[in-house]
Image (cartoon, rainbow, N blue to C red; front, side, top):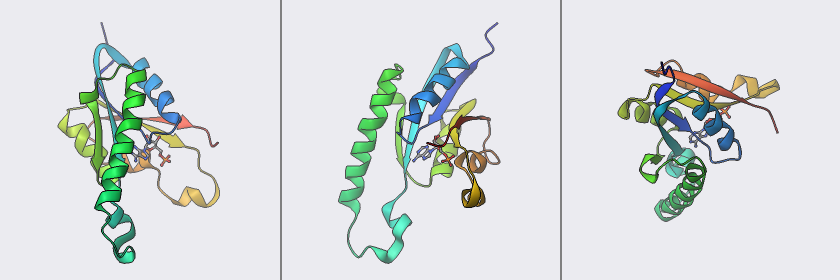
Length: 145
Ligand code: AMP
């Protein structure tokens, strides 16, 4: 019997850690599983508010294009087809959760950096995702570099 996950959503920040997340995702995936990737870009206007006195839409679409290329490179290395690579604009945790619902994911895979000192006070992405997620969440430990 194949007990692996069938629809996995791997949240990548497009860093070198992404390959590690994808390797873990593959390890817990069923034979006929579908792997999806998501990379979220936080809207510039949302991040900086009224501090930027200019139109940032060109900058934003440039960032989206770059991010899409980077995400596709990671996807290709793990044979994930382009139509399962999602580059979305929004807040990271909410957007990941919404995509997971939309594709009826049974697992979200996310990295989890080791935190010490003041960083402990800031919530991690994985921690923020768990309460509202409708499926399992795998937090893959990533050592501090
Ligand atoms: P943290 O431990 O809070 O630094 O979370 C890092 C993990 O959150 C990464 O390994 C990714 O799984 C996820 N993550 C961080 N930024 C993004 C992003 N922009 N888009 C998608 N997932 C992200």
